[in-house]
Length: 376
Ligand code: ARG
Image 1 (cartoon, protein in one colour):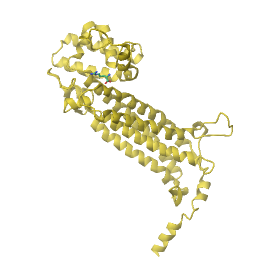
Image 2 (cartoon, rainbow, N blue to C red):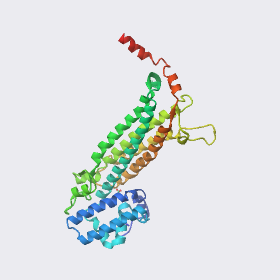
Image 3 (tube, protein in one colour):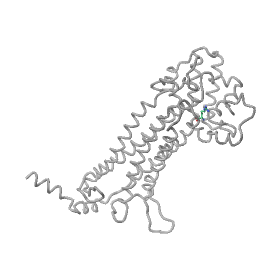
């Protein structure tokens, strides 16, 4: 169903519809779109822009739609352009013309970015939780090996002996910076755009503060033109997720060479290893390699959104529809990678004797001897 076209004498060409369509990826915003529709409805109701009776009818239809979307009994069809169009179709199928009432004072431009902020906040919090699980796994391992001496490296050359627990714990430290970044990001992202309309706000007596509060946002937009075109929160989220990816990739790199025959420090559990289709003796640390490899697409997603935003005129431009797939992909990627890396870390055993034997090699105690002489 198209939400526009009243002044058009023909419907879009197939190629136009095919290129415009975003329902195949933005349908996952449906729960957030329905939530923001309920919030918009309550503002239309309290400002008496719609009758109490209409408001009641729309509210129960919206609630019905929420459970149908949850159960899967309402789903998009081929002619739906995007999530907003599909859900409005759902409402008009139930209510006829009354289903279109929610368009008053609202545009897809303020709607889509509100939905995306809600989605991003929920999912970044989920990733933050998975990161804390990974930190727990790292710190448990670090405690287990805190008394195990191992070579410490600079330039991948023996430098000074370190506690292997200290070596492992560094990864948890890096992830705490990512968690800090998520915390800062949340404050800037928890801003409602509803009420900004297409770009100029609305002459209707809406109450953007009330809508923001209703949706759990901390703040309301300050400039309506910025509100509909701001995707800083997408770019920032993609940077944070890339940074997490880079940190995971550095774990992946270490695990890979620690598991090599040359090092033989790490014994990765069978459950977190894979084999070879031709070489029966092989046991490969594929999870570590995928953790390293997936960082490429996370960085790619960041670059793709920054490039799309660069030079974009303000207010809404259709280019902005390209904000979603990179964000979804980075989130989905980490939702896959984090549990696998957490499991791999938790189940890897290290060879204390090998690390102990290697610790003093390469004159790695030279600095200690120099320090001893200084003290003398
Ligand atoms: N599907 C669109 C998007 O994701 C919704 C906004 C459409 N607005 C418009 N003016 N065409 O960006």
